[in-house]
Image (cartoon, rainbow, N blue to C red; front, side):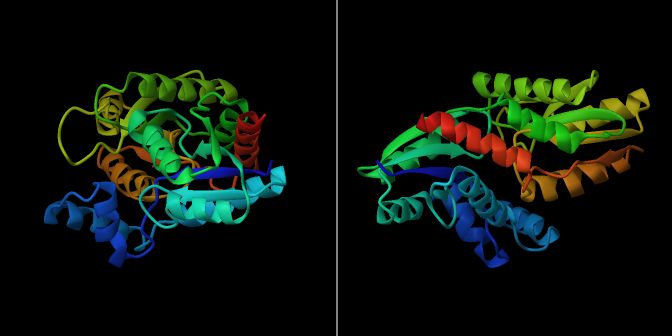
Length: 281
């Protein structure tokens, strides 16, 4: 039986001209308000007009393939190459069984659950075996801890917020943060959810802004913010953290540092390879 691996990611536009179409996929074909479109477009413009998510996902897939010695494909939920396109490539390559790993370590029905639905709908005769979560995979914790080495000031871990309630996701995100802190030898740290949506409603917190307000009141003047729910650079890192949170912190007299994202980390490659091996055993 010929086996392979499928890495799944959210997807992101690589040109400003594609932002409107990308948002239509994110919203499942529902109309996008001019206000939201302009706000999102301005964020991509602020980071250079393009997200590096596809570039890094391609590099991560290539590194895992080199490690495992079997074909590794990658598909996006909301942009090219779509999961359906990747499944077509896998069928053409004669793949019969695939280990599926989402490039989001913590499980949530709104993220991993949707990846699973898209992949299953496109799988046809290919057998799919899933890594539902790998939020405490030792190699993943080691990869984040390595990036965090030499952290300055107070450490604040973050993960992408989701609408309440998302109890399993919240527990797993906090467990990842605790595991990274242990691996990095950090005794004092905080946790927040970032990048709450623009659609209103109640989202998981506390927010990063509320933590920065508290730090300012406590006299904290330097922090290191490390996202532990994202595995490469994209707009929620390059804009939300590097521009918005850094500016928000600076206005309160706080210097905000961010370690390099996992991106091409060899330790992260090892983590993905190990998760895929467990799927295919």
